[in-house]
Image (tube, rainbow, N blue to C red):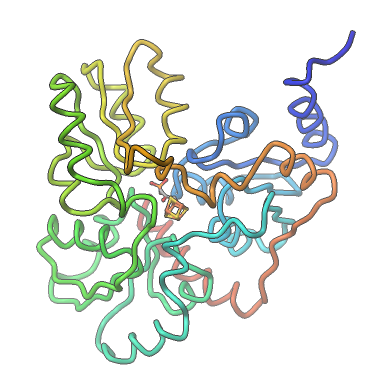
Length: 312
Ligand code: 13P
Ligand code: SF4
């Protein structure tokens, strides 16, 4: 019997995965076809925790560069593959290591808490890493009088400052996908759908977060839609998360906030660089492979492990 075209690549990928003892880890912002093939789909914290648990020989990271770097840092003995080595992140890129090193020098008595969406180099200059799901816990693990630099996301940092009452020094970085979501678009959708709950990722600007009924990481947003009695949600984050939301709650309605009605700005251009074809080629050819020097791995590992310990 002939294999249908839609099954051809997924079947090939599944076979390669088994033959090579590989595992596919995917972020929620990946295209639905990749999410459905993955062994684990999650937010940045869940993905990091899974990296440590896997007994696979090869980790295929269907996400962006800093995520694959984190996987390599946590598991240097394993081969870490990424379908497209150019899948970067505007937020990570908004914090160049040289500029950050100079910035840090201005605040010698501050500790550095870095959001996981940063390069391995920035992680080597950090005391502890956080994700959007554990940022409050990580910040609160420091005494109230501890001076803190928070990098690179000013939106997440501002949100954490507001809810913890801290005055962390913020690096002026942001995510090009979340930062352009407009409050007018949220208000318009809410006016047309007054029964909908507004949920937002903390990488959005404060004006968006002020309009939200719930704020959280991608996993937290997903769990909220699952548990909530509401039937309709206005979702302010990247489009990929809608796939899991619809899967776990097929009877509910999800309206993505258009950042601009004339474009698909809520599609992260980096996350969406990964395709089924690239995933197949990457597993088949075992490249592109993510490589990092031992010194970077050793230095960057400490703040990530500290985060994982504090997250337990
Ligand atoms: P989380 O999935 O950890 O919420 O992060 C979102 C994100 O921007 C990943 O790039
Ligand atoms: Fe980076 Fe934003 Fe894309 Fe996440 S959504 S990978 S923060 S550019």
